[in-house]
Image 1: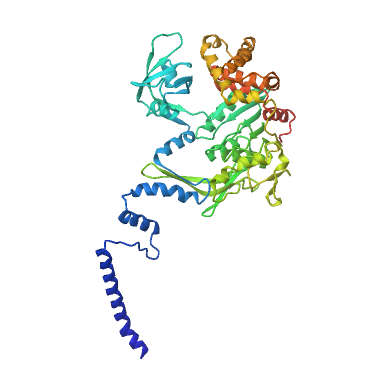
Image 2 (image 1 turned 30 degrees about the vertical axis):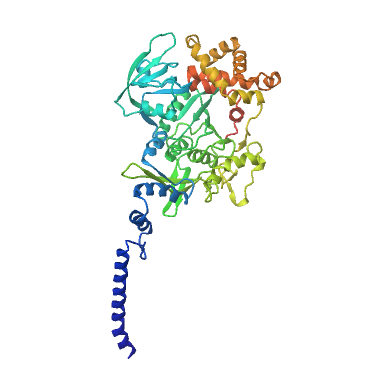
Length: 534
């Protein structure tokens, strides 16, 4: 009896509810109200966006809302997943792609004037005759001297698609009239290997500033040139190198590892483990190698350092690296914007994941470096504590650590010798750099006569260059302190010579000078000479 009753009543109740629903709906429409209704399994995000579009008190752009929401959404995942607006993506990709279109100059802004520090060898500006020391007064018909300008404005004006033209007028010392140039923009390579030279007998020094798509070719070319001079020991300086393209780090590691050695492996929730191993290729499989790292060496830098350390192939010197062990996969949208989503973790050959801890607070994650400094880690390796669970062992029996960066085999703290209040005042006001630039600018013809940085430095010392700096500093409000000067004189002279060398010889003059008393480099040379790298 009950089943028959339910058969009769159920349709009636459904009809009544349907009528009530229609009535309520009409009433709501009549009152110009449209409440948010989200049915099970519906797209809540789009429902909210539609509701805002229809009912919000002011008109809003759905696209603007999405652009604001996406970064916040990805921030909740990890520190390295990110959404990149279209206007920023191209600029962010330039260091990775290794080139951009422009006129090929290095510049600085001094007294609201664009000063050409140097022209890129073989670039468009050098080809038409633009020279170091030139001041760009006009870009097109727009005055760029004596007015408030920014690096961003200069870059925007000088960069452009290859094949397009830009006209500039420059002021050059010794000429009364402005000199006009029409420059055809072209591809400008961004260097990854800042410098490569023989720093000690048979020891090559290579400074890698990033891992871009063209870095491996630069690296091989630099190695080949040094090998022609008999170099077979290597110092690869990754200090300050925040990473870049993982594949490039793999290729460089392959130059040193035996065929079949594991370089790195990646693994994620939806990505099965993928091993990357060394091949039979490689120019340096019998050479000794030291890797220099610090707290800003991250990602691809840590892959390279970890691969050589875990295979007992090289020695790591410096301070604990940053600790980024997450792999991002790039995706680009039709509007030019992009997404970099963390899809896996990478692991060194012994199984270490060197990603440091992270939580919801991104600021706290990036403040970790400051905390290390305050904790004393930059000066005392014993301040670093690792749990036993983070210990791993290489095939050769060496203990290595995971869970927060690569620990060096030899610790070298921050060099604070030679610092004084007088030196800090000169640095804080930028006076050593400014004096070096002005001195070079005023004496360029005389300085250009020297063929290498060593002969130039001898000349500069004969000109009592440091005493000239002291007088310049006093004019700029930095009082000379004899006691402080005795403490810092070698640092002051070293920085001053290096900056002038860079103005004349670019990084090929700067690095050999500035590294003369670099304690980490000196330790690397000592280790290589003592043959303790394997």
